[in-house]
Length: 177
Image (cartoon, rainbow, N blue to C red; front, side):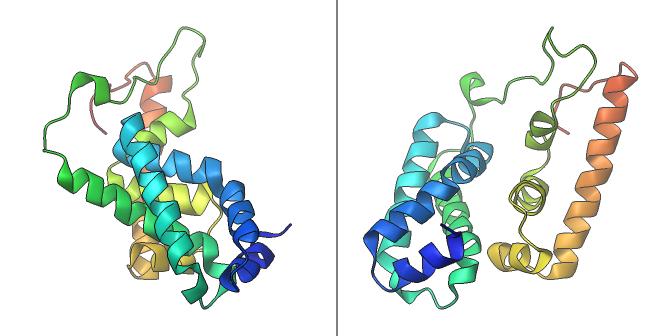
């Protein structure tokens, strides 16, 4: 069933529709949380809190067509709360894995390259390109203007182009992009 229809039913109090809507977004929500907080236990906490808060507030959702934007906004806030609670130090276990493996044979995995972007660009790219949210909805989810979304996307594309170009030229930078 279409996400908007499920969201409309959920907003009217149908718990089964809410569960079905969340299940449709489950992989996307998990990927977004993983790209923000890294640690599996933090991902699980962020997802659990997001689903709980969304379930409690779904009846206040005014526009069911924006369900996806709305729940991503909740998730992003939860991830930021987890990061704020955690100290500024990062253990080696939390560092993202390197993008290159012997099986790649000269190609960069785009998802891994995106994971190396700075957070604001990474979130914007994921929402717009991987989740197919229009610019207006990305702006709403991130509480920024559409022009700020366009600027982040432009900068992210430039960074990705340089990164992938450097990799193909044998100049891959394994540090933070």
